[in-house]
View 1 (cartoon, rainbow, N blue to C red):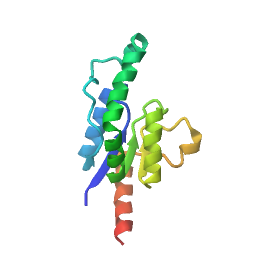
View 2 (cartoon, one colour):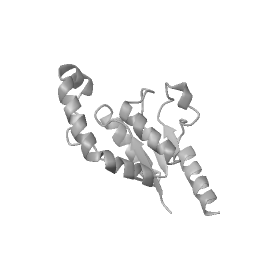
View 3 (cartoon, rainbow, N blue to C red):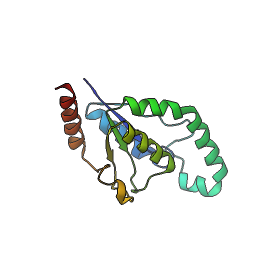
Length: 146
């Protein structure tokens, strides 16, 4: 039985990092069920500049992507063995929080890129290496089979 992961994060803010994390999970043998980058996200876009210059446009782009993919994300989170939050700054967005809540509700193994600023969720959402994640997934699958 294969290992699956849903990677939550912002392709707009962390395009290169999200791609690297996807490759890291694939190299470790995981099937990544996460969304592909939206058409408007690209490595050349500096989201911090875009936000300052045109808050409205960024909100419209995010809304278009969110409406298109919301139900798909719910399905992917439900199907995944692991929920990984790519949060290099330690914080989470509103949307990431909703996705995290779904993962908690579905009883997924949850890991974060960087320790959460919100101390109430740190125990439930640990930082882990790829080896630790892989080991925990196999242990959970073995427990489920026996």
